[in-house]
Length: 466
Length: 106
Image 1 (cartoon, one colour):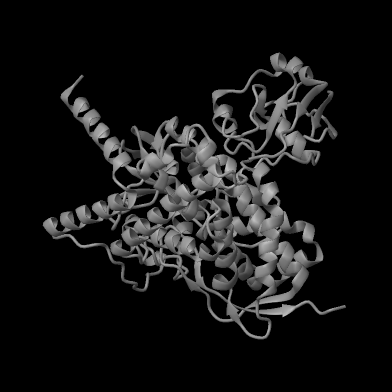
Image 2 (cartoon, each protein chain N blue to C red):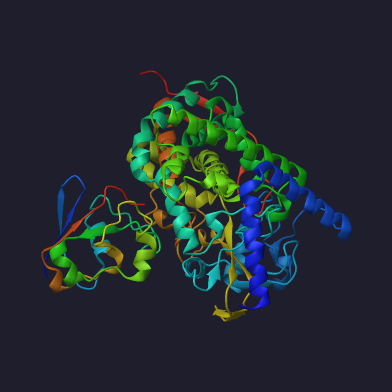
């Protein structure tokens, strides 16, 4: 054994011991302090992004096009930027950005090829553009075979069989949200509908106290909008505070669930129960960073993705009244309309990979260790794959072939849950409302990763009683 | 050139004509067989055209490849004879083939 590998093993062993003996929220705090110390010593500052007008793409030299700008989506420039890359440099290299040098893949077929090539492209150690302040272990950022074992242990909670059990509960909760909406004045759809429904859904999945579901959304938002990772507006301190709070709450929730089960409480179909009763994960609480990682993944994964597709669908319908009329005339189009909405919105812009070896792709030479960003948001608008790609067409024949869920081993685990929530939402909307009008300009999230809305004012018109 | 039968998890059979050179996923979609999604369009990249081959047929169709296995092993309904229909080509040898569908596609 070489000295290096002996050292590596000793380090892993030490980490394992620390992981299993130090409370997780203390570990989060320690990581925060360590980072602050490093920044103090090196005189570096946490990243802060200031919004400036983004120039038109034709005024930017090709090799300086920077699609990592977290304001690209908000300023509506993303379509022209990606269109130029797809056309002129589908495998594009940017030598310098706040997130370091990176390759951009913008065509559907190139993205698919890399997404399904876990042999040559690694998802480790993180899948966003920059290093998150805290490297927690989650299987979305693990390669096979470790990925496979971890994913399998939680997959059951969102497996379609389980969803069937949950459908009536979800419908009840959606109906409750919709029945309490004002129809006499505009209101914020994001806050009252999209966040409310997805937050309640998350609480249901974790069997987390339903009256505290807002906490889940808050934590998820704080974590996914960290500046270092996605160009978002969460300061490091807020990130650590959210991660620490979430860790504490879920450790307590784990023990509470375990105690209730021991006292003979009937076991549910929730994720906590599933983890506690599965051989691979029943001791997960003793591996706190992994525990925190899996929770974070599911909370972030189920949080602003479906939320923004719920808001995006309303905006798309408002901009395309003929499509809304088509849907009302034939509600059997809802499942395809859901796929088209997920394509049109692409709530997560990309996933990141690292080349594990030198690779030739699209006439370019990608070196081992280079970071490669697969822009799903661009692949979903690739004219080589989708006819008239910017149009929102609810009966588009190949809408289901969208790449918002990714392809390959990391394909979105919650895809069926997301589709079901959206389907139920639109089924319930159609029975209640005749018009769903967006009044005023939507407000957009600051991020290069999350493509979403922070505010969407809506005025509802109930169906006339006839 | 013959027929293939897709059997839904509740036992409902759907016969479809084999078309030389087409994948069984394409044939299922072309015949509107419920329970086959084919989200990735036929590249073994999504796992949503999962079928289970009858024991007596598995030596003819062959077992799943490693590539198929990557996606299939994540399904709780994966069985030894599970395959992805997009990776199975229609041919005269498959006349009379019976494929069971899982209750859900992932």
